[in-house]
Length: 89
Image (cartoon, rainbow, N blue to C red; front, side, top):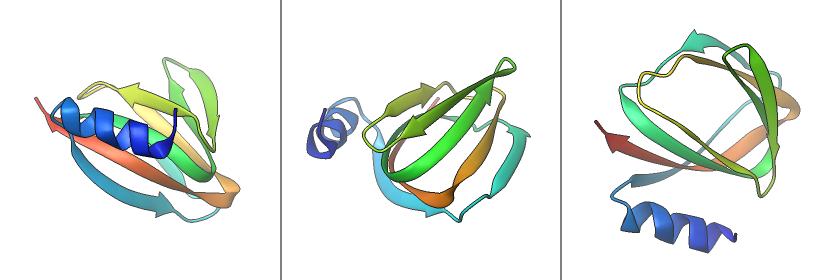
């Protein structure tokens, strides 16, 4: 899926769309968000750990994290840039 297609799907599904990123090697301990999130990596990489299982996402990969779902994030050595969608619960 292209980033344009991903962004179009987010809008179609009622998500607010934003572009963002994190610095190299940044760590975010276990937390949750009061919104549903869908993310596509557009540069670098990030590892998201859910239920104790890490999964690494690289350029072109996408994932979804339901509202209030506990997860941790570890950014790769080059940082990460992404398109993010947020949808209130």
